[in-house]
Amino acid sequence: MLRYTVKRLIQGVVTVWFIATATFFAMHAVPGDPLTSDKAVSPEIRANLEARYGLDRPLVEQYWIYLTNMASGDFGISFTQQNREVNDIIAEHFKVSATLGILAIVFAAFGGILWGAVTALYRNRAPDIVIVFLVILGISVPSFVFAAFGQLSVVKLNDWLGFTLVPVAGWGTVQHMIVPSLVLGLGTMAFLTRLMRSSMLEIVNADFVRTARAKGLPATRIFRKHQLRNAILPVITVLGPSIAAITTGGFVVELVFAIPGLGRYFVQAVQQLDYTVIMGTTVLYGAFLVFMVIAVDIVYGLVDPRVRLD
Image (tube, helix red, strand yellow):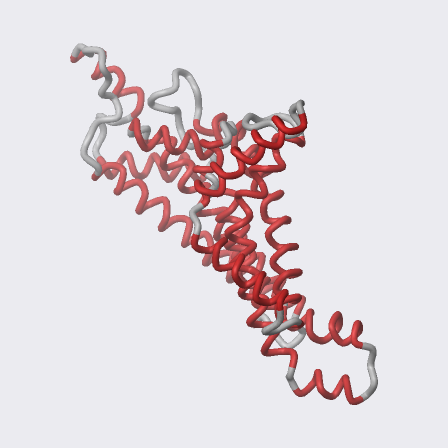
């Protein structure tokens, strides 16, 4: 177990290094200049800015400085936000995105496992047909459509009640988190429901399930101990990447609901060619995704005794 964990961690470090390297050279290959602004800049000021940010040095030397700073946890200073380090931007705004993502993945995982099991148990009957239709709808409709519909529903609800039960936008209270987390988790919940349904249908008529029934075990125990535990393994496999995707991929939802998360700053950095913010957030997202995949691999071996992590 320890050997496997160390091996996967080394592979994860190599993957993060590749992401950082690809991002660095891709940013320097993009046409444009991060120091270009609407105001005219004299050659002297431009030279001082290039010297401060190290842009006057050879590309290989910039790359080495970038890797050295990244290894020590320093992503540099933002090109567009005055006297603000990338680490400060990440520390201040990633926790907002992470909070929203955790709430969304809890909603998605609970709903996906529950509705997937229900559809499998009531196959080809009314609950199965209705839930499968909603699953197809949830997978097909983009998140920004759900975000707009969610805001419209909140406005109608508040008007009908005569007071603000749930805020339309903003951040800071539990009420602000409810609708955005539901909207962000809908697509993932639909995908997990479909996956859980397929897995449950394979398990329902398995030999060990029939044996358990033949022994006279209660239906609830068969469902909980034999069907659910084995059917949930594929869900656990994709849950790690899903957590990373939801936590770091709610850009549209954050913009629609005016949430001060890290996604908004990433979009602004891309528009303004803020190299340091782009590279810092990209490496953070990549490292978070790699970590979640490794964590899921380890948990997979603990949940399923048949899996041996060698």
